[in-house]
Length: 240
Image (tube, rainbow, N blue to C red):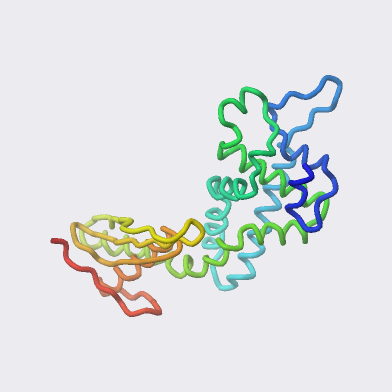
């Protein structure tokens, strides 16, 4: 666990906490030794993670209503996001699993590696306290948090576009991913939004969600709705 201890600078010293954080309940314990598994640390780490994200959002977006903040936090700590972060730290390699769980691909399972990440956060909190744990969480999610202003600017656009199109006949807008470019660490997505065979708008962004939301802004402008956008409108073209 000495390698894993270096996820924090300076490295963690209580390696027994890391052992516990990486031990799944399926792992067999030697007879006569107290049972250690990561569920309690996961429980603690989940709370630390949620509070760290909530604290950052609260201070970064002082004018947003609580409902929006809550949705942003939910999006940031979804299981697929946690699993992606866990894999970036190679936590699957450090997991201690029972033979059956390991044989069934447990080291790649979204739920297991995500739980291990939360347990690791719990271990960091127990050794270093709130400030270090919160700072570590913010650093881990820095890219996603940095992209939130674009996402929040566009959040209402998708909802308003759906409301607008329903008023015009009840159809739902369709978002089509038309291009993905760039290396894995710097992807660019291009999306079109269509309604009943008509192209309403195009959008681009660093994520598919951001591109869809930008396309929704352009579509609202094409429909004559009020939508704030720092760029000129690009109107959709009729389908052939």
